Each structure stands twice: as structure tokens, then as C-alpha cells.
Image (cartoon, rainbow, N blue to C red; front, side, top):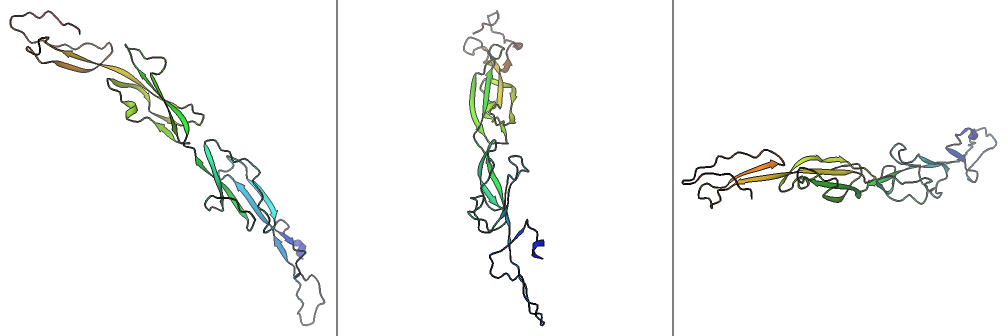
Length: 232
């Protein structure tokens, strides 16, 4: 009985001239009844992310060759650019003009590479850091990545890194901030004041603000009494 066919998948092709629904039963068994059905097709739009961006948009009961129904949702996805639709796992492209098969179109996205973030540098002066950065730089990164400082970011002549946020997750709202606090370094040099006649300059590096001044045993100088050091 043709009416028992699943109506969600098939529909009776009433206009098909090959249909033969009734006839006189012949003694030789030659009578053949024929019923032709058209197959219903479907088109589904999916985000490929289990509904994280949009719920599946399903179109059923579409006849072969009918125009492909359009997507009824929104493809916007934070931090990503919509590239196109992939048909049944193929390369992303345009939706077919007409329906010739049951189709699943999956949205294809590529991450944005222009997500802003900021790098800040603070330089110690007289043992204190400024409340506002001495230098800032606006940069851009890629969605769903971790941004990091470079070796150059962590290097400054006459300073050492005191504290730094070297890497962090890139937030889509542009609020990610990496920073470096540089502690000032000092060099102490002892000279004899007479062009090196008594001793060569003695150089001590790497002292921080308010650290203890190193001792230096001054060589004797014939005919003179050492009175102390003169700070340049």
C-alpha cells in the first residue's frame, strides 16, 4: 500500500505517467501495479561546534532541484571571521543554488589576527616606580592564543627585570596587558684621581638603589695620606 510509505521521506509523484495503480488481474500473472514516489531532501546548517554559535537550522521536505533555502540565523562569532559553508565536509565555499542531495552545511571560521593588547614598561627612579607606565605599545594577536613578551621587551640597558607578566591569554575585548618593571642598576667606579698612577680604575657593577656601597682597599701612595673619596 503506497500510502504506508514514510511521508517524512517520500511523497507520491501524482504527475508521473508511469504510475499504474489498478488493473484487471490476468490469469498469467502479468499484471504489474506501479507507484512512483519522489524522495524528500533536507538541508541543514550547523556551526560545527555543537551549537556554541547557533542552533542547527534544518529545512525538510525539499524536492529535488528546488532552490536551496537560505540560512535563517546569524553567523557572527566573537573573535572569528566567517569564511563560508562546507558541504558535507568539503572545502568551504558558497551554498549550492539548487538542492540535489541531502546536504549538511557547516559554518567555517578563521580566527581574527587583529585582537588588540597592550605592553607597558615601568622604570624605577630613585627607588620608586611611577604610577603610570613610562612607555606603552599597542599590539595585535590572534584569537584563542597566548601572547608573550619578547626577549627585547625584557631587556633595558642599565636595568634588571624586577617583576613582569610575561604571557597571558589574549582577551577579545582588548583588555589584555603585559608589563615589565625594571629596577635601576648602578655602577660604582673607584679611580685614583691622578690618571691611574697609583691604581687602575676599579669598577663594580649591578648595584640597586640604596644597596650597600662596596669597600675598596686603597693602595698606598708614597708621600701621601689617603683622606677619603670624592663623589663625582
